Image (cartoon, rainbow, N blue to C red; front, side):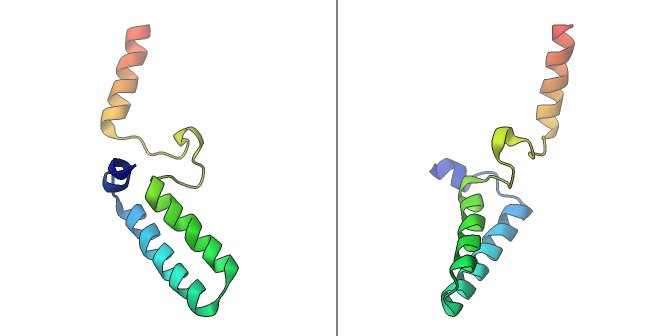
Length: 78
């Protein structure tokens, strides 16, 4: 879990972190439960490096290396 937390940081992950912290502070100041749940959602995404549709990495953007491996595997099957 610590390795997942410390690797693969990108711009969107930083945005989620800042947004989650900001919304959490606002939730605490206004004592708003709904804002607290939204902050928890963003911070969970940061901690686990997942996105909104986390099943099977369907929203994941493939890296160039992954695309090359996938195309190489398709060619080998044929």
